[in-house]
Image 1: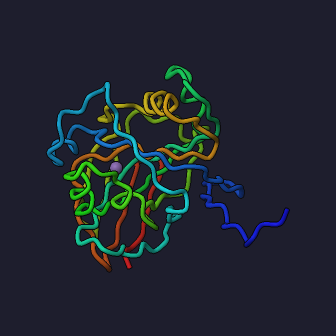
Image 2: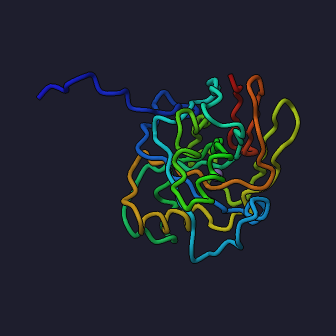
Amino acid sequence: MPYLFEPAVLPSLPIAGSEARFPLHRIYCIGRNYASHAREMGAQAVSRANPVFFMKPADGIVPEGGDVPYPSVTHAFHHEVEMVAALAHGGRDIDAAHALDCVFGYGVGLDLTRRDLQAAMKAQGFPWEVAKSFDASAPVSALHAARDVGHPARARLSLEVNGQIRQDSDIADMIFTVPEIIAELSTLFALQPGDLIYTGTPAGVGPMVRGDHFHAELAGIATLDGQIV
Ligand code: MN
């Protein structure tokens, strides 16, 4: 049966050192995964029993180096630099002890946020989609295969805007580690090859405006440069 109209092109990401591209399925995100960021948001103490998950649309990615359009409606467009894990295998109820077997590799990305709309949604107890899941809300670097870079448990995670350091931490400060996030997510969703996981941001989130240049880095693993237009 023919489609009524031409289907959208499948979003995909480049893979460092490979001609192949990584086809995207879903983008999962964890919130409040660094105590320093939870504190700056005035959020309650992070509970290991109660992780906060949300999603972005797969076509919300901006592949490496792409221009990021300043989004509509917001007056507080915030950066959140995050390590990104990319899955080549999925499943349900994955044991944390085996979860890293699912990970193809890693990159660095920005979980871009309409912070003013997020605050309004939180205040009303409403969902976060308008704050988190908008077009071009997920810039991300090329992916680096774990066979090349390993499965990092510690690495400097930083973001500069116009050459000024804004966020500077280490992924060792994550509350839920990558295998723990995969284990928790897989109790809620059937994870699949092509899923990306944004693993949370440390302190230092703040606004960007048109013309800003950003440089995100997961030291020794991935970098991401781009600008707000
Ligand atoms: Mn985030």
